[in-house]
Length: 318
Ligand code: PMV
Image 1 (cartoon, rainbow, N blue to C red):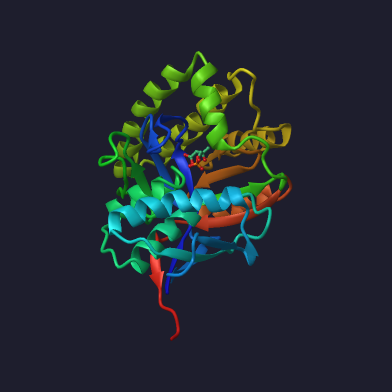
Image 2 (tube, helix red, strand yellow; image 1 turned 135 degrees about the vertical axis):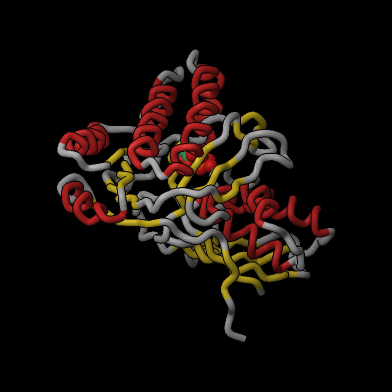
């Protein structure tokens, strides 16, 4: 039995669009912060007589859709390990239901570590990141502590690694706990196929990722924040330009973006970002996090997070 834990991450430079749908290769690099809240803990146990893998998610038998996503990753791991036994996988998310934090990144990062350990593989961080990527692109980054750069490129080249960065905090503002209607996976395909801006997005994301790496290295909070908000706005502009249009942000989301602008107007380093849903996350300096959270409380339910650890093994009592 092997148990691993991993945390969600929020992208500073967004991943939106694949170069290869099967291998889950991104069209451009992305940069993210792994958080220290809402981990997923996953146990994998060899089930030598089972015909199929089995997934218990938050105490319940998982749906066929969730199971088949997990099986696809486990098949890749088994092929590399030269093993054929199926696994029983038990996965629990600490995020309260409706916390607005997608659990696929933490989930597949924890799964990759628990499963490779259970099959007796000795994998380094880059290898683990590549495997997590096969479940959910952004999971490649949850394997890594702190600020991660996920490289685009070939299967071999496309993994995440930690980059130097100043201390950062995030205040997530939960506006809507309803399940999103269009998954990021589906919406990425529609965007690539129909938006006239897609090529410009990919090109500008390559540039923004390179600039973000430099800003992080220099500890330039203002530039990190500006690029973070710019990448989110460009991503949502791209998504809205799909045919049919896809809208993730609501009027409540825009109010949080406005709050960030207002707080910047009084000299605070606060920048907004949002993923494939209405909730908004505010990026700030750790020393400002409590104050930013107080301002955001009027708009939604807030959670403060800092830089967290990448995927790690958890000792199980015998
Ligand atoms: O890896 P996925 O399919 O969960 O896609 C993540 C997409 C965004 O969250 C919108 C952006 C990102 O880089 O995390």
